Each structure stands twice: as C-alpha cells, then as structure tokens.
Image (cartoon, rainbow, N blue to C red; front, side):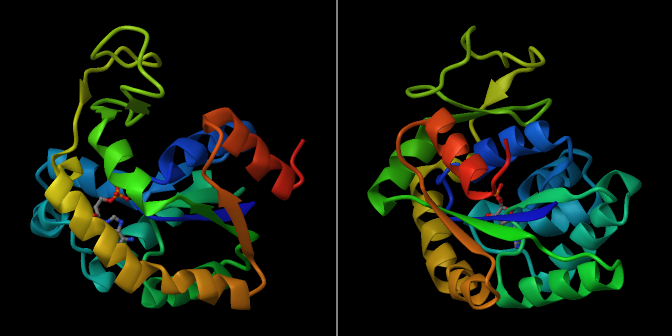
Amino acid sequence: MNLVMLGPPGAGKGTQAALLAEKLGIPHVASGDLFREALKEQTELGLTAQSYMDRGELVPDEVTIAMVEERLARSDCDGGVILDGFPRTIEQAGALKGLLHDQEKVIDAAIFIDAAEDELVRRLSSRWTCRNCQAIYNVISNPPRVEGRCDICGGELYQRADDVPETVRNRILVYRQQTSPLIDYYRDEGLLVTIKSEGGIERVQQKILEALQIT
Ligand code: AMP
C-alpha cells in the first residue's frame, strides 16, 4: 500500500502515520524528518533546508522532490510506504504520481486528517519529539512515562524550534495557501479519505483502519 497523509501542521499526521506504518509493516517516510536528519548531519541539503524550516516556509520543490525520490528508491519501500508531509504542493503531487508510475505503482489513498485550526497552535506548543527516533509526544494529552525521555528508545525529548507560536502561525498560513489545494486534487483523483482528528489517538487510528478496510 502506498499512502499519503494530508492535513495541517499539528493535526496528528506523524503520530497516525507511525502507527499505521507499524501495523502494515511498511516504512514511514516523513519529509520533515529527512530534512531534520540532514540538518543534524550538517549536509548541504540540511543547510539549504534550515533557513526555510526556521521561517516555517516550504523548502523549494526541486530540492524536496529529489530528496524524497532518493528515499523512495530504497528497497525497503518496495512493498509500500506511508508518506507524511509530502506532497505539500500540487507540483510535488504531480512529481510523486510520475515517480510511482515509473515504478508501476500507484497511490492507494490520501488520508486527510482534518483538525480545527484553533486546536493546532495549542497542540504544537505542547509537542515534544524524540531526538533519536522522532517519536512524538504531547505533554498534555500523550505524555511520556518518564519526563523528557522517549518511551520507545529512551532518547532525549526536545521541542522543535519551529513549534514556537509565531512560526506555527506561518506554517498554518503556508499550509492554507500551498498545501490545502491538495485536498481537491486527491478528491478529483478519487483517492481522498477524510478523517476528523477527534476522540484521541487510538480512536483516530481506528477510524483510519476502518476507512481503509484494514483489520
Ligand atoms: P514537518 O516536520 O512536516 O512539519 O516539516 C517541517 C518543515 O520541513 C516544514 O515547515 C518545511 O520547512 C520543511 N518541509 C517538510 N516537508 C516538506 C515538503 N514536502 N515540501 C517543502 N518543505 C517541506
């Protein structure tokens, strides 16, 4: 299965994508994680992306598409992939379709996680991420068992620099202008599955599994 996760920042895409990837036994490929890893290693890609990420802007399409293309070419994606945070523009969506087509693959569904905008800033400002395995926690609704430590790998939890309120507001604006047109794009392709981000992590996951008819 090749799945795309869509939705505004803070809707819970990453959390749901990770659960789904585990359930289906396929990789969770998050473009933001790929950029953050490149930045940690101080590669040219990471340094290019940094200035955009710090402002909550999108990294240019050609850079992003090349990075995701390289990741999708790895053999662990042969049996399917959950894409999280990519595509984020119509151009990226077109490139993805072409890329998969070349490998005789298709997107099976685009899961749009729909969340109320006033929830997003609140959610993101209480989000903590594992520096090691990128697992996501929310200090209010989904805290780690030990403060500041990842339940899964014991790694250190940190708050992303772009989760500060001012940058979050810009990310939401960028989402509205550049990414939300993908909702209609995937609806027109007959691939859109809309899930309301309400009722907690497990309930949302259950709604996704039901919609995809995964048991
Ligand atoms: P995320 O972890 O998905 O919230 O992404 C963090 C930041 O990485 C975004 O605010 C962008 O600066 C950059 N980024 C991630 N995915 C993309 C993408 N598909 N296109 C352009 N920029 C991206």
